[in-house]
Image (tube, each protein chain N blue to C red):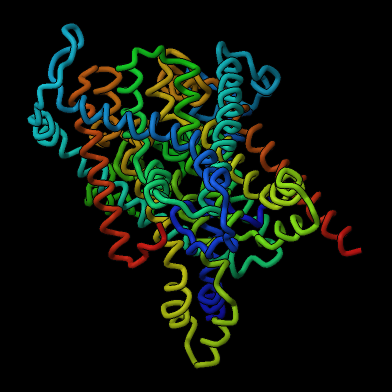
Length: 267
Length: 313
């Protein structure tokens, strides 16, 4: 049977594409249901095509407020975690000192712990300190759990850097600041960017830690969570679809720039 | 970030090369690493390590919200919490373990496809793996409610193929329902953590020198043997970090169990959450989360020892 033989030969490809379909299916559902006009409070069954939600994405109370709050938190958390994480990564790769092992474990542990444990323990700290739960406690928590991921992302890049490039800069009479700004930083930039992007995505999408430490503050994931109980507005699907589209667009533009640059370099 | 560079797999790292040639540093220079470390490490100590200490102390307190809590070294809380909630613990480990295995089975072919077969489509497939991330995971999990809905296409197909008869007999589903059953929860967990499996697998597969495959072929190894003896062992770092990145968060997750499951599929995360935020029984909640942490750390340590990749962490 030629068909069976073809299937056997391409088994990996078929299985891989099936997994890919499994991963993308919910995104397609989210997209399709952003054009739905639901009956009742829940947007789970298809009723009728409509563009209402797309025309008025902020038409639901508190939705865009929570979205902007999430963006703000993600922005500051990314900034904080990237700055602190990059410094740690450089220290760990470039210097030998005592307590390296202990510091490595301290950085690894937050990634090796269920989120709910970190969320709960941070809450006990805030309760004991009598801190008011809200924007600041969420921001503190987000910087904390993004930090380790930034460190690993930057570390991977710094480790593969050739130290001789910096030595060469020094030999050419560049001062330490000049060497760092003109040589070290540009080479480390992709790692730092990857870490920052990861931190932004993690912070923006975090629910469990935020749920524990936000008090009555409502971030976007918390809004979605609440709406799952109260009734899901179609606007949620619109925002989800827009986020997906923006991400794909950004990647495509990035690819275009990269390939343009590569072909320029070749010419 | 260009897509060719997948986010690195956190726990799996090659051994660090020796640092740049070190000169005799002055005292001021010797302090540089400490200044670099200070802010970040302080942050982790105050907002990660210290909270764990607070939680340990909370778990041995007694009292009530009205009268205040006091440390009385009441270890009984641990025993009581375990006795009352062991079904949720077992369920969490079972669901997380199943989801991890499914992620590995589903993720491996896709990672392999991207690393070796995709050719010029590689970047596109990578984008398709990462892009769903950007739609909030809660929205995507809610979409599974639509997909698995009673009387929906998936349920129809599965029941026509009599798959649901088998799964119901196994206790994974209930009669003609998938939603609000263990199968739905595991499906959601698998879905949500798949990228955490695929990316580390891809990074470790991508590092494999293609000439090794050719060499294996030259030595008369069949594709299956090549995979078993060359590819798979060399991808072990990815397998280990992928399974850890999937199992650890999955074991503490409660979102999937709450959104796709029923009261019979509650995981330990839900219990911790409701004890902390609704019942306000802080000692029990703290004890539960400590037990979960201990179980996970023990399992992880054991697993890393067994898989012989200790130096990865």
